[in-house]
Image (cartoon, rainbow, N blue to C red; front, top):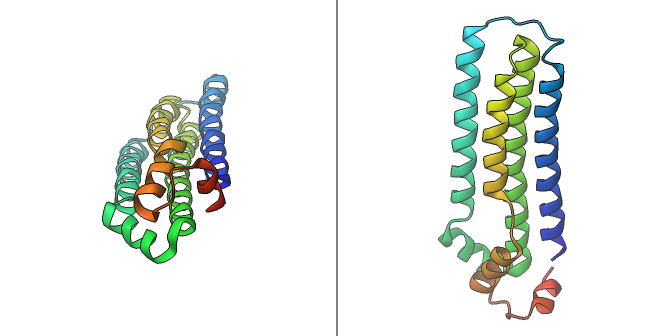
Length: 157
């Protein structure tokens, strides 16, 4: 399952980037000037909340049983793999966007808390969307009638 490996690598890379942004915020906080901005504070908190909850809703909607059954029946194993890959990457990119928003707010205000809070939410989103090979294999077996042999599942790609 090449798609799984590529997707898992992408999610891991975004996780590393998220953590690096938090480290960059920690290192740079002594160089930034503190500027209190209450409107940015409220807007950022609401945006992060919407992005975090939206990523969960997106994943649950895209991986709904009825939808996966339809995709498996119409497009087979390759369609399911494409759907799993695309949805996982989209949710991971939302997590990375959350982290980037926090870092940008830190650069604007000098308050490293924005990056730390956004990183916490982004890490949760990235862990939530992390693909496991066993879950992808189960999905293929359940919705695409792929044999239990892992070699045969790799051929479906």
